[in-house]
Image 1 (spheres, rainbow, N blue to C red):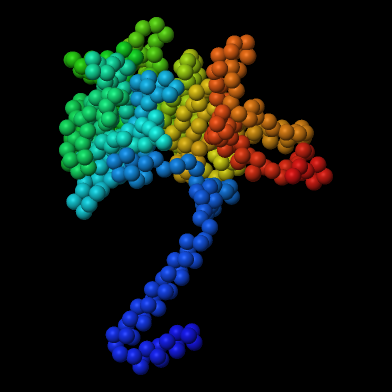
Image 2 (image 1 turned 45 degrees about the vertical axis):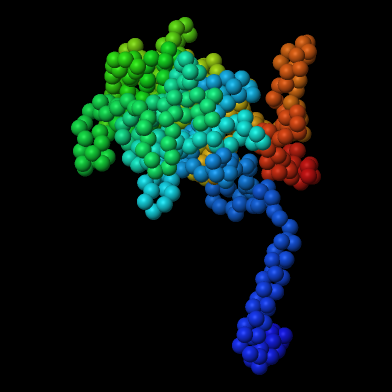
Length: 485
């Protein structure tokens, strides 16, 4: 401070120009010094940045995971208004012989680009084979009142130009959008558009699924249908649509031609409960290309409806799950249906032969954690040994198989069974393990905590979390003598 006082006293005796020049030099020196200090500070990586604890974390230390996906058009992190689902493209050009692209369905309030923009939901096309890392290669915009709500499905039939038909649930406007998806094009979805421009895609109007005429006093004069989840029959002829405001399943036969419409009420007999259908899954016939059963998650009724497509109105069943069921997936052989219950922090597992719940999986961060994880999405690993569940309100993924085994082990300990270890085999992926090493196929089996390039897998991250949280544990519960640190 004394140095600055002296400079100030000297500057008062200087001409005005010289005084201003001196003050400018002082400011420039100060800024330079501060910049030097700032850039010499050690930078923190994403893994070192700790997220402040909150009620939802239940005392667990959470760190950012993964990387932001870059948009090829801007070379900046991709922006999406609330991604609610990922759908894999139907081609076989991916590294694993499956689809190369992921379509992110972004059904939030919508993006705006300037003061005159309308809010617009989007589809983002992610090229998983882009180098050096996956990136968004196309965005399709749905300016209000257009919308893209949850449901996306593909026809398995490839057209003459190598494209596939893609259907998108149109929500508010009671539409099912129809696009072409060509994995060989730079921008796979056509027609495409730019922000704040009209969407020129064709569509099917499904307003006829409503029992009520449009009213200016409800849903802004749109018939109360609001399609969300959609699915296409194995023979590619019939669309099944979950009508969220219509409390029904819409069946659209011969969508290319006559478009015969059938509406199935999903309410239980004698019930006045609004059921708000959300997602649709099809169980195909063992032989033939038709649907044997259609499952619909009923968000408002804590049930999954089972519809017989041959006699939909008379053979309706309901399976009790838990609060607010949303997304559903079938395993590879279609013997199990996994239903995520977003307001119960759980997943219900349904035996599709008996149509009954055979297991409930808790996906909370801990057994005694408060509610509020809000699981919304789920998927199975390639070997179907691990279930991944996205807990949206805590920005976490529950790795179900591993945590279930660990909780079983803790259950044993609490009952006095000594436990000396908990081992995952193997550390890295195995080679030719599927043939018990009897054949030299050089086939990598992705079962390790790390892949062959020593890159950690999600299950490895989960295993590290278990070690971190339970590193001070006793062989026998509540024993200080037999503790392991």
